[in-house]
Length: 568
Image 1 (tube, rainbow, N blue to C red):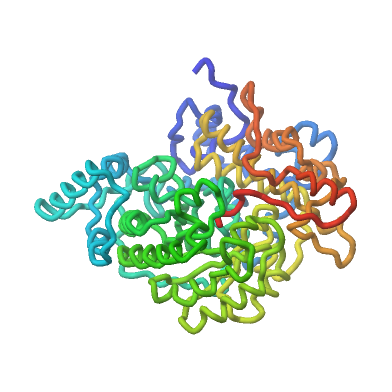
Image 2: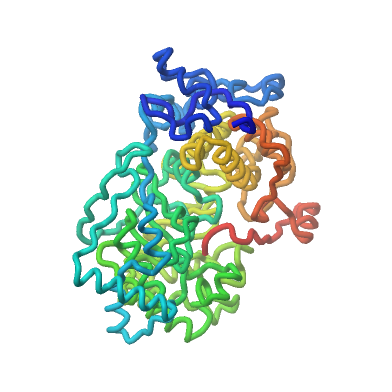
């Protein structure tokens, strides 16, 4: 404890509503743990108290670098009644303990997976019926699996292990697992769907999106092989917050035996409304394993894709299976295969599909091909397969233009939600929101609070929250305020903005592409970083290629490659 940094000002995100903080003296807000009982007041005067406001910045206040420097004039979702509902950052959250996250698996289940002792009766039967050999297991693992199946059949049925927390529970409580009902129906029509986003699509970010109008959220992509090995970091990607009303889990794998077993586990143990298989991921490491976009490359890959969907859907009794694909592997239009896949996907067992309007070779360069997406929607429609379009949705006009034909179920919003998550509110309310710098800062305040609840309020949790917040800032700084654009001009997501000065000092700070300025914003909520702290963004969204620099200097459009931003 002697090495513990000084406590941060403000109220602990856990010690509220009579709930004790699970981190005790290790909490960076430990000084506030006794304040609520002493004062009887659930509204503190520091960070996360709900009593501060971020608007009306001044130079002196900015120099102090604390959220108390700003005054909050309105809620993040705007004043008055909004289709998005009341925003949770109005201070009311202080009255109740934080809600427990779902899908927090016990150690016993993790050990069963690691030792391959988790019984997979349905998937084994499906694979035998399809004459697909189980090659994802070693001989020793096969023995363990057979022993687990005998224990299941001969001794007694396996009783689901109680989960940590439950819907409506409190963090730290042990709640019994909810009974699973029959097969779920999936309806994505007209719902705002936030894409699975590597690194930045974490649970705190998804909570921000839900508050701003998201109807459908989905986990970051998890590798099926790591889930079946019981890798804790991979299982953590499956966490769900109770506020996520329609939630999916995205997994990636390229072989029927692996995905059938993963599907059975997810169907049995994970609280989700659908499972999505990423068959469009362009990452080199994923494609090298025969997964992702590799399934679109040739006839062998397409045949494996068919068996994969059939095997996985057959092993899942309750949870709908969806797929996400790209147009094809190569840039040659004659080699696009998505229309053939989507024509038959419903018969294979897919409940819905998402099409990203780019190829694997494109990754994220150039604009998405919405003409081809509409063509595929027409092909998929006769089979009854709902199709979700994906690519470059950055405003409510983009969304309405793509939905105009009536053939798409909805649009998936990826990098647009990273750069300006309030695009979800714009779509819901059919307006252009000239969001103020103070309102943007309030959104980071929401993320900080959600991050501390998710990763913890001890030193490790604070620093983890800081890193993920700065990772997100590597996208948000690209936003150009509407009030600074010429009349009738809209920002284009595929074009990098030139440096600009904002309407006040805070707006200029939020537009900076310097890591030091991102750290300065994070300090307003999380205090100063630990000595020796350094940060390098995982993605390229804040950097310029040589070609982009030349194009920017000549004020011309340039293509770019934001590698590994959006899953598929």
